[in-house]
Image (cartoon, rainbow, N blue to C red):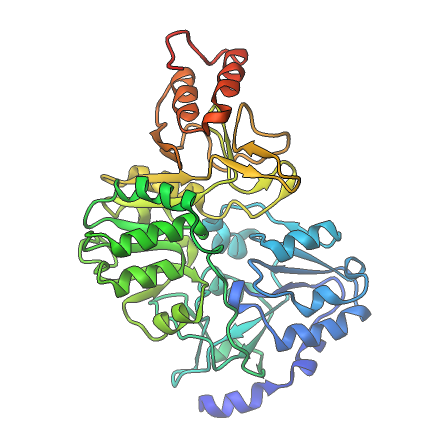
Amino acid sequence: MDYKEMYSQKLTTAEDAVKVVNSGDWVDFGWCVGTPVALDAALAKRLPELSDVNIRGGILCHVPEIYKIDNPAEHFAWNSWHMGGIERKAISEGFSYYASIRYSELPRYYRDIATPSRVAMFQVAPMDEHGFFNFGPNASHMAACCEKAEVIIVEVNKNMPRCLGGFEEAVHINDVAMIVEGDNPAIDELGGGGAATETDQAVAKYIVNEIPDGACLQLGIGGMPNAVGSLIAQSDLKDLGVHTEMYVDAFVDIAKAGKITGNRKAIDKGRQVYAFAAGTKKLYDYINDNPECMSAPVSYTNDIRSISALDNFMSINNAVDIDLYGQINAESAGTRQISGAGGQLDFVLGAYLSKGGKSFVCMSSTFTKKDGTVESRIKPTLDNGSIVTDTRANVHYFVTEYGIVNLKGLSSWQRAEAIISVAHPDFRDKLIADAEKLKIWRNSNKR
């Protein structure tokens, strides 16, 4: 059948499309900037008639309309693969919950374990001449989701960048039940956490000094990774490669500065590989139809085997806090969920297995509470309920504005000494006293 003919037969309104959703259904809302807009608004009108609907999604870049209905907890639960500020607020309102998983495991989870989504609805790029709807910068786990979903509804957005890949970056019209054409809103922009601070820049300098020519980069989101990217763009580094979970604006700056060629990559030579992307319009314009960029499923990008196959792999990520044993918490404040496991541990492990590879977990040494009190992010032990994202056995380099230390393989007293050496000076004596109480400080330690 002619694909255009099939398209016209499957074309419908958002209001008619969401009639397929029933009480008790599992519904997938896609991911990040692929979150539906017109379908979301239509479902918000229908949800008050329904109950016990479970919706999956993650990294929301705008408040969905379904969040705005009266008493949302009576009608649905939002199950998030990775939390942001919007979803954190919804937790306190009783209808949002974090789904714990290593991000790299998500495609297999959809295929083999998860309750299949009866309905999957998400934004896509316009259909190409071969009948494919590109997922945009959201390959992630969407192909696996589509394989198991009973009803697939795509919301076409002409502004969605077409992100080239090679596998699992699109869904074919044969597998789509309904097509909705929305109002083509601009793709959500996600900033990098604000301009880099002096602390961010100090941390970035320590890290950039460790990066050799020909290195392959992975950057997390936030001020510190962006500061690293900015310094790299201004550096003399050359022949860099990209293999990352999230593609952020910093990569565009590095590429436009001529630092990225990917010529030294053992796999995917010459291509910048990523599982999903979110940033400013500059980023979306750059990745659109760009054969240098490769959109791929997260089971590939975050696979330790893929990462370790790339020599001089440099993984750079943020964290919330660390304790004197070297345990990294990158996803909660005590029991309050902040983000999620994501792929940080995958990259910490994979980078260490890479020939010449290094992983850097960085943070500011302190934070200021709402009442103006300054507290150390380096703690004797993690707060009650805090999540251990990276175990003490796996952490490689730890960085604050006061220095960089290699924690790999250190005994407990060496580790405590190294971590305290990069703490804020105002907290070091207290941390030494804490280490002594914990029996992880020796008299021979430096004070």
